[in-house]
Length: 285
Image 1 (tube, rainbow, N blue to C red):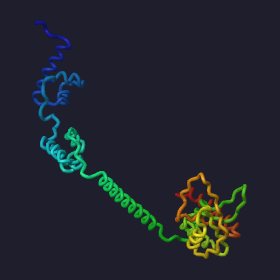
Image 2 (cartoon, rainbow, N blue to C red; image 1 turned 135 degrees about the vertical axis):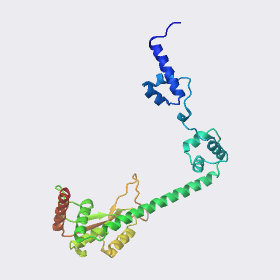
Image 3 (cartoon, rainbow, N blue to C red; image 1 turned 90 degrees about the vertical axis):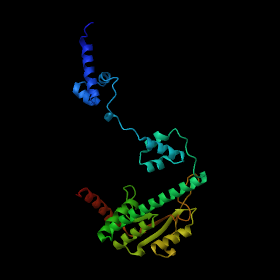
Image 4 (tube, one colour; image 1 turned 180 degrees about the vertical axis):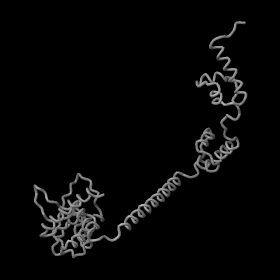
């Protein structure tokens, strides 16, 4: 008989050792460490035909759990219902029962839509409660403003929404326009802090011509706390037929324009204060 030599003999020797280790109950990783064989393909060839030890096998899903899942599916239960009852993953449930027919719907399409709408209503109600809670908590954190805080807030608000002087258009006067009643109220409080008397104010409604101008004036008169006759002639904006306006209906009241007569000095103070706020923010620590 020809003597076996070379790499083949080395492989056969390794295979005998690998099989012996396999029969002793070692895992592939342990055999790899014992023999110093790192190549997975070579390692598989070395133990080919030898079953792995029982302890190295991955546990299979219990037959009774799988059978119970299939029984529940035949009863018309959903994946989530089966998962909740058996305490297993949804992917396992899908693997066990995916060959079974889908259960018949438990309710009509109309009932399904009603349930869906009810669920959406509950979701939106929860979201609304969360929004209100967040806003209420934020409002409570502010508390009562000092005169300094009101002054700074009023300056920032005016610089964002008020009329400003331009090099090409000299307009050193306080003129403010807005459609938000709360913004208007804050602006009036700021003017009062600056010592502006009500008789220095010119009030005017700016609104689309197709709107109810008289109703808008009554609305703003209530906001400001004056008689409607205190308003100057309204500014009517032309309606462009091709544009789609969203600010329509009973809730649309246009904007209120508040002009302070003889306010050039106040305007300069306000503009200077605004730049002071900017510089203060840059140096804040």
